[in-house]
Image (cartoon, rainbow over all chains, first blue to last red; front, side, top):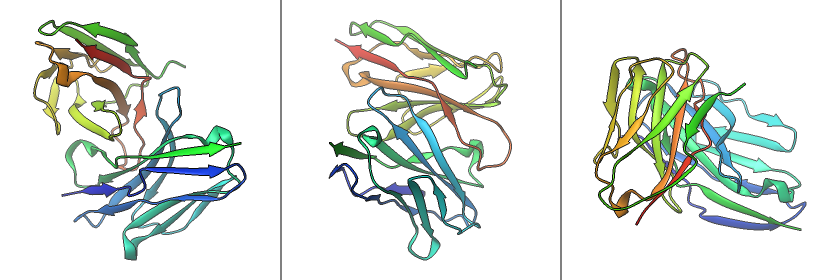
Length: 116
Length: 114
């Protein structure tokens, strides 16, 4: 069965610090997809990034970067020079290619608090 | 550019009452989903649909029902509201294409059962 673990329940940093959010997953499928979503205090869920299991390239988008390591079943998310606007709950999610309906399994989320 | 629209945004119900949470999407997505989010928890899948007329149970379907008569609409029905159903409910949709297509979420319905 698929499972996503976000071991960090809550992280607090001071503005301009770098912060890494961990995501570890379990799956028996050889083809799968990983996602990160952001939930700001306003409550909506915002899609950030997706990664195919066969594409191990890391990705950088502005201050955000993602490190996908198949060998350790991890898909970690780093925010460089954090800002107060980064304060949110961040969810990692997994979908298996063979799963009917492409359902997502979510981790419990990590609360990020960035203090000025 | 509406995307996924959920109504109402907030609702308070008494124990035993029933209600329908509405969800509409204008992106012509075949796949639609209902989740609940409890405090400090991730999202749990209640029901999902891969097209009009087709629905399936997710991880936590007890106490809920759904229907999918059109591609656009995917209402969630609570028949006998219980305090355990106090939660934030999210509807999502995605295209039926490649598995790496993201789900797009509505803004959520905050439901309290008293």
